[in-house]
Image 1 (cartoon, rainbow, N blue to C red):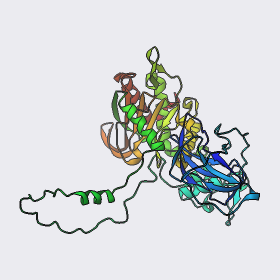
Image 2: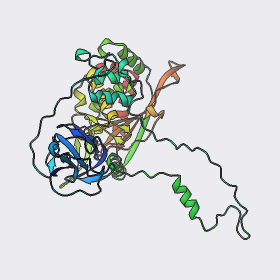
Image 3: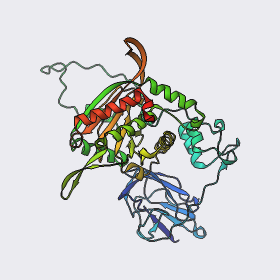
Image 4: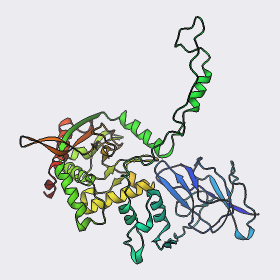
Amino acid sequence: MSTQNSTLPDVGEGLTEAEIVAWKVAPGDHVDINDVICEIETAKSLVELPSPHAGTVGELLVAEGTTVEVGTPIISFVSDAEAAAPAAPVAPAAEEGGGSVLVGYGSGGGATSRRKRVPQRPVRSSVGVIAKPPIRKLARDLGVDLASVAPTGADGEVTRDDVVKHASQASVFRNIETPEWGEVREETRPAPQAAPVGVARGVAPTASAPAVQDAEARSEAIPVKGVRKASANAMVQSAYTAPHVTVWKDVDATRTMELVKRLKASPDYADIRVSPLLIVARAVIWAVRRNPMVNAAWVETENGAEIRVRHYVNLGIAAATPRGLLVPNIKDAQDLSMKDLARALNRLTLTAREGKTPPADQQGGTITITNIGVFGMDAGTPIINPGEAGIVAMGTISQKPWVVDGEVRPRYVTTVAGSFDHRVIDGDSMSRFVADVAAILEEPALLVD
């Protein structure tokens, strides 16, 4: 029986390896061209790989959870005419040969022509809902009943925006898969025996191996790889390269909350999710224009170091996802209207929730916002994203007593914090920048200027 192997493709962005996260097919399954065969995780994001063949799956050559290099055979196919009984589910080793390349992901072990992706048809469920398979998966992930979603697509089709708008979950900037303790919360242990003569009470005997083994049995080892590994390396590089300094200011954000409420009620924003983050983003862009050094970067060149000032804003939004910290950015955010910026934030949120943020969206950022307020935190000292010189942390917005015109009144108060690279930005520049962001939150009407 002849088989043909397909290899892990080159997904670009300089990545040389990836982890097989989950197989979507099994030996004996029939697949068509561009059917998803597996999910892989690179140091940048989670990617679905399409099938380069129409035929029967022979073997899965790499087990789930295994990291392999680009060009490694990962799956074999058998022609329909020669398909026999299913092979073993997973083989630890892969035979050489084959070398076909998965469609649409560059060159690998051998050259094949690119095929056009077959568009997915909307699928009508048993309850009459029309939605594409990716939309159904998104709805499952968000816990949304498609039957209760008001469709806005052509012919009554449910769109991604429909699902996101309907979802009542917390923002993606919360960790949506926080690990839980095991089922056993408490256990009864024998009372400690009296210490032998000559051994002080409370001093453990030298034979402590059982205690060590018990501790290991009640702990969990989490491999550091993929997105989390890349994020950890970037944070260490930033923390030990750039001299960090943080400044902060308390802000009366009552008028910001009033604006958010009006936008939510506006027909122009009926299909857009609006949050205070939108006003913060606009405030940062406005403040960058007045304080351009905050948008600069320290760059090492062959002729020595230089400070590179960017006259555009690729606005990064730090997102805590189950696979680790991501910082996708909105390209040329300075050119977007309020409504377009809101839509861009919605798209960023959606792709991060799905774990499908493309590598290109995580590169080229110029300044970042981290919204720690969703965790109930008042302030923090964030680490600067590598390649940037400043980052803004937004604390929670909550009602507190505030002095207004000599009277104490309940107001919506938050804290704006900014960390900066002191090689690039002086303290007075960052202070003015943070003060400008605070000024917009106190009076959003300044954005009209």
